[in-house]
Image (cartoon, rainbow, N blue to C red; front, side, top):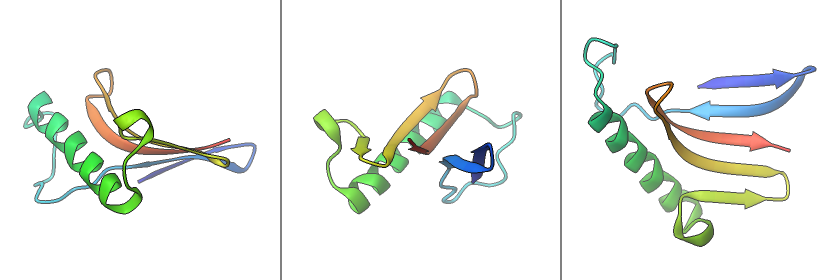
Length: 84
């Protein structure tokens, strides 16, 4: 979990589920595994929050957004909670 702050205010939380993963490193990294992790994140959010906006795993609230994302640049899948 990563917490991001701006001017001492929490602006973002980044989460990654780690079920059955053995210390992921760049030596054993694969895009296929990260895309599988993204799907696990989506299943988790669906089980906790129900269907997202427009059928995708994206949720908008008056306080901010929750999204399941995969970043090719970072080589990682995450759940991002972003506050307005």
